[in-house]
Image (tube, rainbow, N blue to C red; front, top):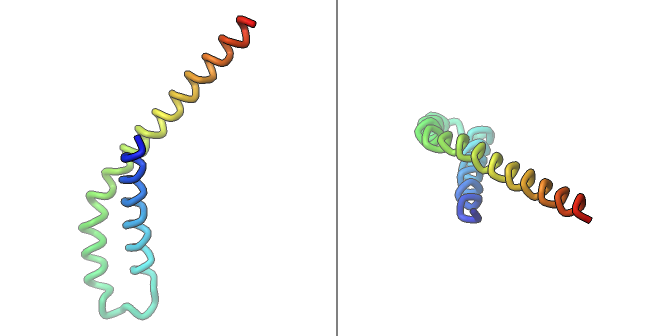
Length: 77
């Protein structure tokens, strides 16, 4: 599971670097190239979004199962 979070972190880092490069002033000559690179890179990076939802659902399910076990133990006491 840690490897999945590392991959998501790298994807988020790449997206944030691209966002910073696109919004920095003074890069007008490079802006067209950056826009095309960003468009080409964001398409594969957007496939990470469903994976994020899956990981969040997995965490939610694990927390719910843990809460059920704790309630079961408390009721037995």
